Length: 206
Ligand SMILES: N[C@@H](CCC(=O)N[C@@H](CS)C(=O)NCC(=O)O)C(=O)O
Image 1 (cartoon, rainbow, N blue to C red):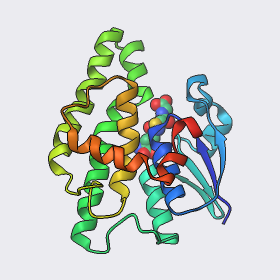
Image 2: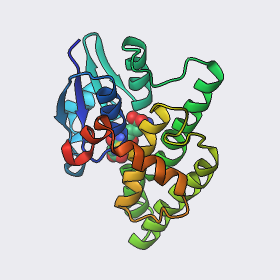
Image 3: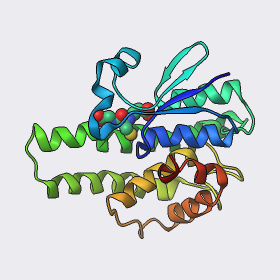
């Protein structure tokens, strides 16, 4: 199958999909949608993805959006190496970690929200950064207690939870969030970024 990713290197949602594609050993083409130049709001891209966000993944039968839906699709079509455990309870647990990041932490801090805070609500740069730090710290405080694995978020292999954790840590570091209160998350991140799939998907390589 030909795969084309509409991507932006520093988008953490797109970064998740790049990691999943790399773990599954799939080759794919990338088209950069420059968020800083608002290319995601241009009519050509909006015709493809009316929500105007990245990532989108073009597959043979159509265009997929939403990083978790894209990754679950890849998991169904290319089951190995698996990103979800075979046991239902464990699978729910891995998804819950992934969703804590993708549904609870990340949406509060994406570009549109930060631009709305500054532009429409007129908050200062300092208050915007406090907002950003607050929601990451709040989410990571819970995650630090929830993650179970020694090397990874869960179990002995990287899962969907790890695919979401690494981009969120990257983002946190970019905005200088203090991660020292989260030694387990930092140790897991350190283990993951050494893996070639994670390294190949890094924004600097994209
Ligand atoms: N829930 C979506 C989030 C996608 C998303 O918000 N992407 C960001 C980049 S990380 C984006 O395109 N932002 C554009 C904007 O906020 O204007 C997913 O997981 O794919």
